Image (cartoon, rainbow, N blue to C red; front, side):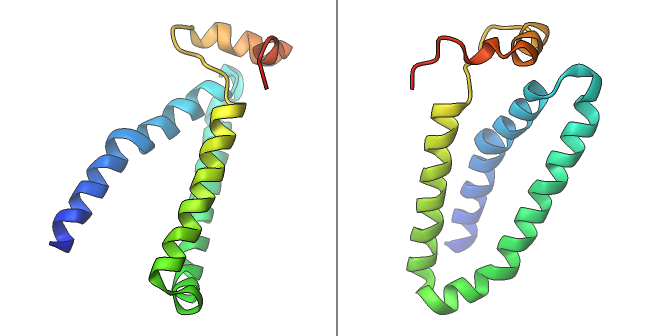
Length: 113
């Protein structure tokens, strides 16, 4: 049963979260530095993944499995709120228009807080 759940989680991550990460990374960096920006971002993501993998056993030992997952769920909820409030909507816009707005700061004009 555990193997089935693992497949569901893996497919859900592949279909939703992983795709969103790459789309956001491709949109937030100007074209002239996109390769370097994505490279540095992916490096940071791997470092964060390694840190989580390193400290997760200690977290489970101190908080238990349930407490560990609730702690991580709370952190994810904070991250979701941050993304919802801080990332501007770019649906239906070209990368060039997004880049121009990011460069001039116009991407945040008219945003409600």
